[in-house]
Length: 248
Image (cartoon, rainbow, N blue to C red):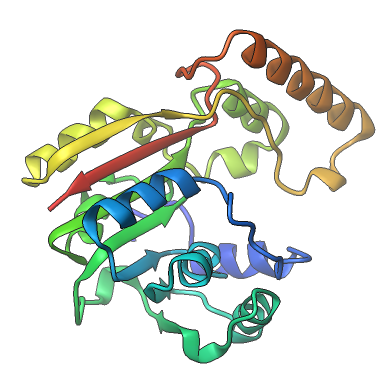
């Protein structure tokens, strides 16, 4: 599948090396304000998280907003999901799970809220993957997509200290104007796309990096945080994320 920058083996390896996946999700989880605004403004009752194993956002939406939630991914390891649910005082019956290849699946239902966080940038054809999201959105429903901004300082870190991970991302997709135009072409309305977060840098499997790299990363992180606290703004060069929102 030429459109895909990763394969199942990549994700199996990625998740199997992760430790401590079952965590208590706080009420101020990343993007909580934006999601709360969508849910309250549009009376959201149902939601699906695409490509979201182990289901942090599906669990978050169930725990704090009592939504009817579904997790769809083509790699789902139930014990990990169940442990995450238990950690958040939920059970297996609180979340629907669909384990399937998004490219070979026709939505059996549509949802008030369709979200993915860190998914679309793993595909070469950005318009195609966004349109596959749109197929799950009810008329009047909301599309909510976030992705990392590797055109910022954080991307420089990935490229120089974790090139293998960097190459699994479609950097061209990290363009708010491109994302907005795709949604507008698809006929969506109230389309908004922009940078989110003042500053952050991270590295996958940071504990395995050299002491020098970890120290350098910490110095840059602290410096960036201080700078953007004194002069708060969001920008292509510093913001770690991009958010896309639209209604069908």
